[in-house]
Image (cartoon, rainbow, N blue to C red; front, side):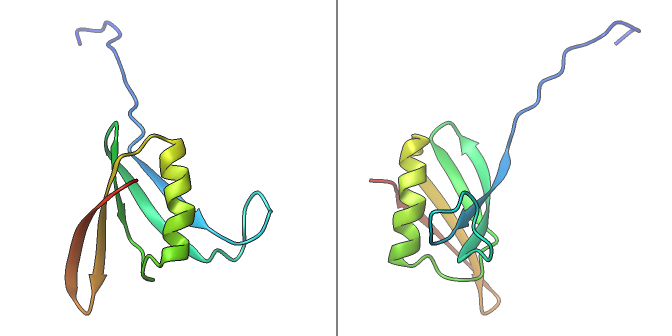
Length: 91
């Protein structure tokens, strides 16, 4: 960079999904938690969860994904020592 300041860019790539019942802003304990990684503008990867994505959990997650205009989710779960992957369309 020859002593001159260069450019820097921060791209936020990871986050956390937390699902809980009730009207509180944040729930504790949470009913379901996972790590989220941005793949591109309209797709995310959900990983690091140990409990299945039940229909009621998906309903909560789906509402937030739609608010954020996410169209597809790549869900990754390790179960019985195996990596399970699936794409989920957000509709």
